[in-house]
Length: 169
Image (cartoon, rainbow, N blue to C red; front, side):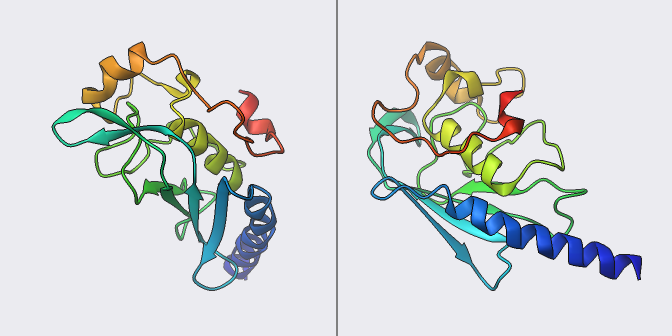
């Protein structure tokens, strides 16, 4: 009985998160699409803006996209498992993104949402220096590039709103 109640709560949460995910859409800049059946556990996010991406055996290169990543809630989300975020396109040249494209989320709490993790991933995509965690590197090859990078979100890019409370930490 308790298991059914927990499953119902998780499904209700995923349904509520759909609205938050779709609130991140910005025409011409950010596309968000649920994949599979409702309530969606997986979203595909496509971003059209410049950033620097990893290059095999070469320095990071500027790319105007599209940049595509997926965010997926596993079977034990949100109580025991963080969502998995992975770039399908060339991953950004960020110390906390593995060469495979998987993003090292770092510290995560069960009250965070797929939408708040998506906003965090957008900041990772744009190499926001506030997202660099040099103590926990997924990609040491990008360290010197990231240490010297002073950019961030491209000027004029409409970052998603609302700002989620859990981002203020």
